[in-house]
Length: 466
Ligand code: FAD
Ligand code: NAD
Image (cartoon, rainbow, N blue to C red):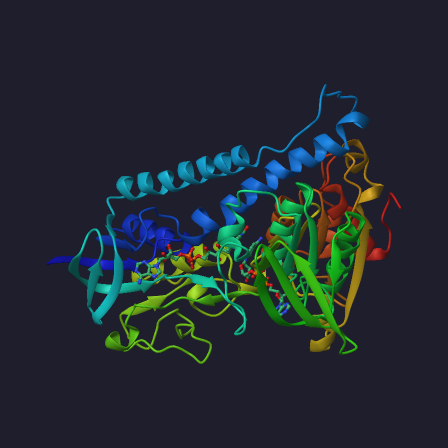
C-alpha cells in the first residue's frame, strides 16, 4: 500500500493548490479526483468556462452595439455561432485543466482518478480508474460543492438546468427564466441576454446580489434593466414545471399574488451546497455541521486531529481564491508554520459588465455594527478613460472610519473592477487610510483614477473631477 504524508481529496482550486504547497514544503503528496480532468468546479464548470462565455458574448455585444459608433463597419450581418463559442470555451477549459496536470507532474504529486472515501482516519479507498487503497498521515478534504436546488424542482438538465448545463447549451434560449439573482444567475443570464435571449430574473430577496453593498445591487439592477432584462424582485418561486419544450415557473410576488413565467429554459441558480457524498466522513470521525459543511476549527482542522478541510465544503464564501488561500494555509500549518488568512479581505467579484467588486465591510454591515464611517463615491462617467471606451456605468465607493480614516470597505462597479479591486485589497492589507490612497499617483487615463478620486471624496469631500 502506498503511503503519503498528505492525501488531498478533490482537485479544485483548493485541493490542487494545497497539494502543490505541500509538495513544495517537502511532503510526499497524493491527490484524488473522481473525474478524469483535474481542476474541480472552477476550471471545468465554473469560473473559467463562465468567463470564457462572458468574454465571447461581450465581443458579440460590442460588435452589434458599438462597432458602428467606433467607426468599424462590418459588411453583412453579425451572427452568433453558438457551437463555435462553446467549442472555444471548451478549449480554454482543456488548456487550463491540462495546466494542472503539468503542475502535478512538475511537483511530483501522485494523481489518483477515482472516488475517495475514508476507511478510517489514515486510510482511503479509491474506487474508479485507479482503484486502490492508500495510507496518509494527514488528509485534506477539498471536495467542494454542487448546485443547490429547491425541494419542489426537478432538474432535468435539458430545459430545467443548473450552471453546468447552461455552459453548454446547443441553442440560444428564446426566453431564459433565471431563478436566483445571485452571481451565477446574473453572469450566465448576461451571456444569453447578449446573445439574444429574453431573460427574466426571479429573485426571492428585494434586490439582486443581496449579500453585497446595496448601492452595487441598485446600480447593477439599473444597468440590467437598461439592457432589457426583466427583473422580478421579492418573488417566492413555488413551482417549476416542464410541459413539452416549455417551462412554467409560478411565484408569489410581494403582494402575495401569483405570477406565472413561461420560457423555454429555466436556470436554477439559488446557491451551492457542500459536497461530501460518498466520502464516508463518519469512518474517519469527521463531523459535519447542520448545513452539511465539514466542521473545522480556526486551523481548518476537522474533528479528526489529522484531517483538515478547505474551500466550498467548509463555511465561508464559496470562492476559488478563498479555497486557494485555505489550501496554502493548511499546507503551511502541516509544515509547522504559522500562516494567517484575513477573511475580511477576501474580495468578491461578479463578472458581469459592468463588473462588480468589493472588499471589506458593506455600509449595511457598518451600520449594523454601529461603526461610525464616512463615505466617498466617484462616478465612472467622470473619467476620460471611461468615455474613451464608452464604459460610463458605475462608481467606486470607499468607506473609511470616521475618526481614524482607515479604509473599512471598498465597493465598485464599472469596467475592469475585477482587476481594480486588487488595489483596494493591497491598501486594506496594509491598513491604509483613505488619505493614503488619495495621495498615491494613479496613471492617467485609467479606470483606477476612480479609486483615487473616491478616496479624495472620503478623506475630505474633495474629489477633483466632479
Ligand atoms: P471544487 O472546485 O468544487 O472541487 C472539488 C473537487 O473534488 C471536484 O473536482 C470533485 O469532483 C472532487 N470530489 C468531490 N468528492 C470527491 C471524492 N469523494 N473523491 C474524489 N474527488 C472528489 N469562484 C470565483 O472565485 N470566481 C469565479 O469567477 C467563479 N465563477 C463560478 C462560476 C460558476 C458557474 C460556478 C458554479 C462557480 C464559480 N465560482 C467562482 C466558485 C468556484 O468554482 C468554487 O468556489 C471553487 O471551485 C471551490 O473550490 P474547491 O476546491 O473548494 O472545490
Ligand atoms: P448566490 O448565493 O450568489 O445567489 C443565489 C441567489 O438566489 C440569491 O440572490 C438568493 O437570494 C436567491 N434565492 C435563493 N432561494 C431562492 C428562491 N427560492 N427563489 C428565488 N431566489 C432565490 O448563489 P449562486 O449564484 O447559485 O452561486 C453559488 C456560489 O458560487 C456562490 O456562493 C458564489 O460565491 C459562487 N460563484 C462565484 C462567482 C464569482 O465569484 N464571480 C461566480 C459564480 C458563482
